Image (cartoon, rainbow, N blue to C red; front, side, top):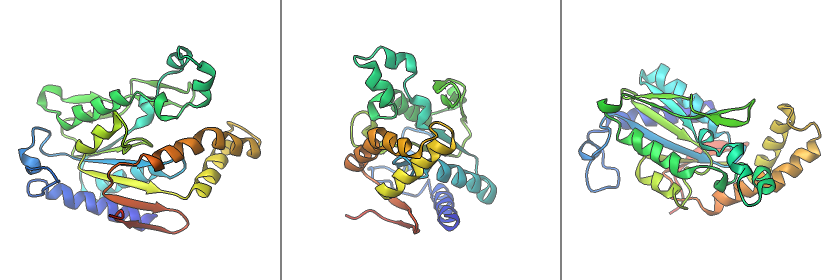
Length: 246
């Protein structure tokens, strides 16, 4: 995956350098849009076990070290609904069992956050993103700080490129949209083994069962509801990049 991440970091650096010239599918160039003029924003989506978080972190590091651009990564996990909110749902047991499904996230808050980052000015020098506490298994408000001078901003999360409301609004707010593709069987294997390795569940068979009852459904959802994508990242046994089929 090293070569793929190197190419992706180079893509971002090149596109950032061309911000003032490049057309983005809208009627006006980036420099004329009413938004942050010197920031390149990428949305990376992918199903469970696709490796999107690892890829986002790797690319961010390369952008900073190899291309000397400031770069931050914000995960959608910080916008997961807290357990207290799940308790108030019509079927709390189902809500907790299906945590990670599209409807267990505050999608509107995620869209609003990305919009703030798109339009960030000196009037709002820092924007604090929420994060997810793995021990408490709940979001908290003290995550990544997006400074007004941040040049590259990467958002990563399973539903970022969904064609459903409110997520579909994100597609018009970012400059580049990448989807990390992984075959369902490999996704299932990675997620089940990760659950076991983290000590969430010792029995591997139960880990597979949990995948089938939750993560597998989430994977099917984003596959069915994937919106517009600029680039496909293959993270199977064979790695690579290609444009989506027309």
